[in-house]
Length: 315
Image 1 (tube, helix red, strand yellow):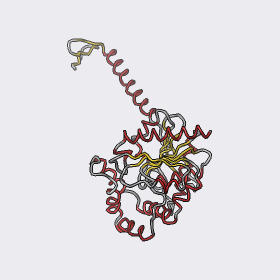
Image 2 (tube, one colour; image 1 turned 60 degrees about the vertical axis):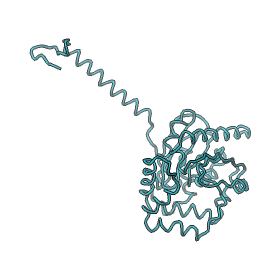
Image 3 (tube, rainbow, N blue to C red; image 1 turned 90 degrees about the horizontal axis):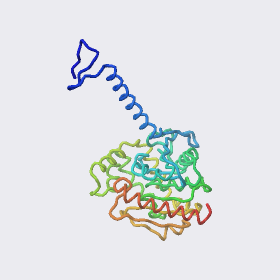
Image 4 (cartoon, rainbow, N blue to C red; image 1 turned 180 degrees about the horizontal axis):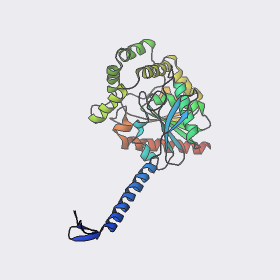
């Protein structure tokens, strides 16, 4: 661009434009950029914070509208980001809620014990703050135990539970010695032990970058929180509470699982009012991330099944 110093015009190629017109055009372009950025910001709601029963701040996000409301609960040493492939898909037709359990992500970590019951209170606080009528709780891995506790706290609001690679066998015969052997490497060196522990749950065919991100992310979790949560969850299996809680929750349960571990339908149905599983072949523990399209279709099917059951029962 050449500027004519003795004129109020600007040379652009072969044409001459008044400076005032050029400035007006530039101003309009800048306004467009500002408004465009504002639209982008408005499209993504800010995270919110609510206090759990014990006063711990819990971070959560709400996307979309529509019933039933879907509350997604992450697993051990994970956070709300693990549902990034589900939020845009399901928020087209539903109010979608994702949260960071206490001690995870952006939530508070002042507890001494990270129990499944306390996590259940986190989910209840977020669900009540997010609004909506009928609710389906969706939990990955440890989140399966958490949504069971949350459902016990909200029996009149929750219409069903969906586990994601969890709840394969709520009668799993865990012993204290089994657990001591399993947790020993994590206690000795959490970073190395957690990578090995979680690495066994990821198939070799899974995208290498995703695999490394998951392993690095889990290994960066606060060891005190992770070890406490693991202990509390496994103690439910040692004591039998993992199964007994479903004797109290008279709600249908569906799990969307990979095929790394067998599903014990008979054991689950001894305690659940109804149980079905959708098993995706050749998928690993993080199927909602490694195989999102298939996982979303299966979740969509499970949501529809639970909604129909709720309609039949008048809930």
